[in-house]
Length: 463
Image 1 (cartoon, rainbow, N blue to C red):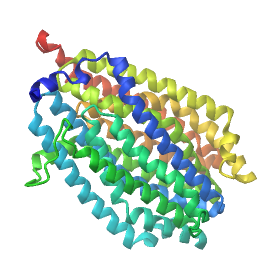
Image 2 (cartoon, helix red, strand yellow):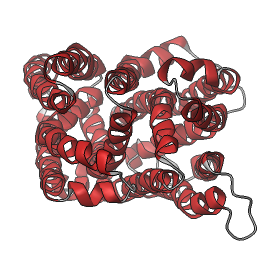
Image 3 (tube, rainbow, N blue to C red):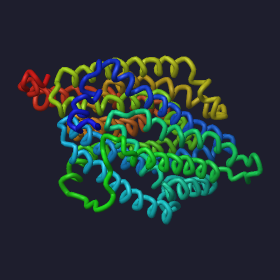
C-alpha cells in the first residue's frame, strides 16, 4: 500500500540526511551537467572562431540577448523552485502542486513573448551595437534563429527547476546533458557541412543550439509528468492564481532582474570596448565562455543547495539551513580558487583554442589574468545569494547584483577606460565584486536577524 504523502514528505532526504554529504550528492549531477553546458558554449565559439574573428564578434554581440530570455527562464524557475521546496518543507502538498503548474504556465507566456520579438526585430535590435556589415549580418542570422526559437530553452528550464525543487538532481542533469551533447555533436556538422549536410556557417551553429534545446524540452516533459514525482502538474482545469504568481515572483522577479542585469552590463561593456577595437569585444565574449567552466560548477552547487536551504527553512530547521550555507561557501571558494590559479597560469593556452590573433592574444592574456582576481569574492557572494533566495528574500540578491554590475561595474569601467585606456577596464570587475561582497555581508546580518534567528523559537521536536 502506498505511503501517505505526509510520511513521504517527513522522510524527504533534504530534512534528514547528513548535510555535507547531501549537498555533494545533490550538487554533483548539476555540476556535471553545467560543465557540459559550459563545454558546448565554448565548443560553439571555438567552431565559430574558425569561420572568422568577425563571426566570433557577432556571436559575442548576440550573447546579451540570449542572456535576457535565459534570465527570465532561470529567474522564474528559481522562484518556482524556492516556492515548491518551501511548501514541501511545510507539508503543504496542494500548494506545491499549484506552484509547479503555475511555473509551466509562466514559462509558456514568456517564451511566446521573446520568440515574437526576436523573430521579427533581430536586425533592429542589433544595429546600434555594430557598424560592420559582415558582423551585423552574422549577428542577425544567429539571433533570429536562437532567439526566434528560444521557447524550447525557456520551457525546458522550467521543467528542470520544477523537478529539482523536489530534491531530484539526476533527471535535471539528464535534461541538460541531452541538449548539450546534441549541440556538441551537430555544431561542426552543421557549421562546416560534414556527412552530407550543407555548410551553414553561423546559421549552422544556431540550428545546433536550438536543436539541443528542443531535445531538452522533450525530455523535460517526459520526466515532469511522471507519476513518481513529489509534485503533480495539473494541466486539465488549471487556472492561474494571482497569489501563487505573486509568491513565485517574490523570489523570481529579483532573480530575473539580477540575471538580466548581466545583459545590460554586457551591452554597456561591449559599447565601451568597441570604442577601442572590435577585438576587445571578442575577448570579453571569450572570457564569458571560459569563465563558465569555473562559474558553472558553483551554479551547480547553488542548484543543489537551494532546495536544501528552502526545505529546511520551511521546516524551521535552523541548524541544517546554516550548515548547508557554510558547506556551500567552503565548496564554492575551493572551486573558484582553482579557477583563479588556472586563469593566472594558462590564459594564452585558453585563448589559442579560439584561434586568437596576435592582437587578441595581447589584449586577452592581460584581461583574463586581471578579471579572474574577482573569483574568490564571487564564490562567497553566489552562495549568500542562494540563501537569500531560499528563504524568500530574493530582493537582497537583486541588490547585490545591482551593486556589482550596474552601480559599480559600468561606471568604474567607463572611468577607467577614459582615464587609463583599455588595459585598465578589466580592473572594474575586481572592484565591483569586492564592493558587492561588502554589501552582501551587511544584508546577511539583517536577513539573519529578521528571518533566521527567530527559528530558534521553534519547538524542540521540530529541530
